[in-house]
Length: 83
Length: 83
Length: 152
Length: 152
Image 1 (cartoon, each protein chain N blue to C red):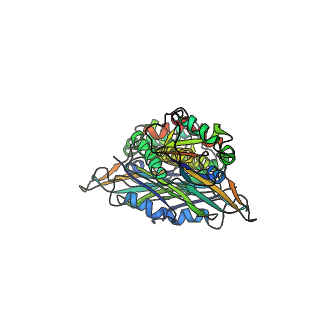
Image 2: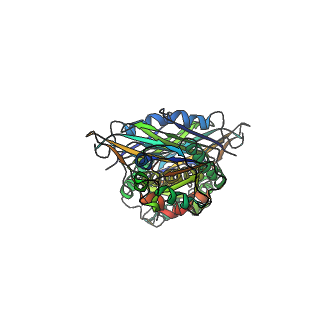
Image 3: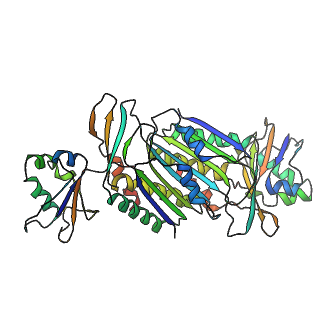
């Protein structure tokens, strides 16, 4: 699955996107985030406050409990500050 | 005292302004309006619905019970429709 | 204190110029909310609106409304322009723009000024029909009077 | 149904052109409310803001917000433009304009779109300081999240 990062999450991880094969145990958006936390120091740092991280599946806002099955892309980003 | 009329009140009376010497019995804006109603057919027509008429003393909105003493100009007009 | 600019004129105005003037030479403005009021043709019925005003009081009353807005919200600039005379459908009638550090006071002030301007500024609209009929005065809308209640 | 126009671009835009485009060739619009969001220098501290966005999702999310506004209010046109990239103090960041027969739906829709755009459109601002320091990300304001509550 394509995984994208934005703003300081992208900066902390060091890349804007990557392909990640999530194990079958990863069912929801929250599971995906927890999986990423375990991929190394930079991921642990980027996701150290999971409560404030927002996520989108196929470019639509989703909640932590949303299942990721069937989606082509998941994105993680900080609270938005546009406008 | 200078008396001004606007919109359909001006049209009904047939002039935009005039000088009127109100008798001493005219104390408030409502008194002035009642006095004008008695000046002729065109005035009676212009002021036939006194409840909807608005007034200004020296270019400030006033209520019917406001005393007119000391003012240089009184204006009568329909509800405003600017904007 | 925000600079207030009020103009009552028969000439047209340019919203861009007015918006640019609010922001000119400063970098502390976060948002400018503007309202542009236009002449409607009422489904093709109207050839023009003729706006009568009370000279002197129109300027003073709109200035009073703007001063009240400036006292209620933290603004960096407030402009109100109202035309009088004959205006064709699609033409500009009124313009209000409020500049502030953030968007909320700018939105609130612009809407406040428009609400009061509608029911308190001494202007009256007369309809010129496309059928040649002249003389129906636009009636005040109850809705406009009710709009003032929420600012109490 | 109101025509919705959404643009996400690095280039500057001209509010006048956008306001004129909403009214072009029609005489049923009574009012156009616009919001222009500008880059503040934060008391002289900032040299620029750098706006990062999520390509694709930015257009789609702002379009969704505009469609929701069109379903809630009777509008005749709705335009939303958001820039990305580096923007200097005093420069334009965002523009929203809503056209309607009367002023109330135009005000409500413009404020609704701005409220949701602030907290839902995928943009992030990074500060470039005048002291050469680059990299502080602007934090979301609680106030912006709270602003959404009243539209429920």
